Amino acid sequence: MAEVRKRETVEKYKIDDEQFQKNNKKSKVVEEKKVKKEGKSRDKEEKKSLWVRFRIFCHGVVSEAKKVHWPTKKDMVKYSIATVAFIIFCSLFFYAIDIIFALIQSIFR
Image (tube, rainbow, N blue to C red; front, side):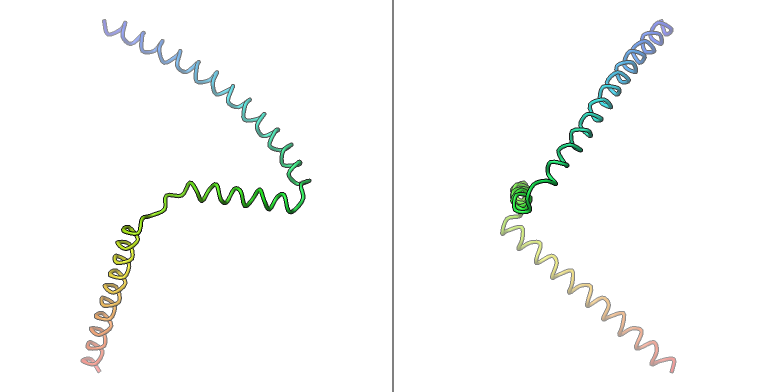
């Protein structure tokens, strides 16, 4: 019984491995074609005028800015308060350390 399961598992993985290798070969061919097409399209982009390339750049910036998850006003208030509190805590911490070292130096002089 156990041998039958082992054989089934081995056969299953052989099939999966064969499919993986076939898909991998196909994906490599597709990637090579994409690289060739990108190379041709880059040549065409270089021939475009400066103004056209600038407009394409601006369009890309706007489209990416639309994808950004902007925080709400409530979140910004929380983040600002947390930042200010952290800065105050760190400054007090280092001020305390500075005072302690100053006292230690004054004792040993």
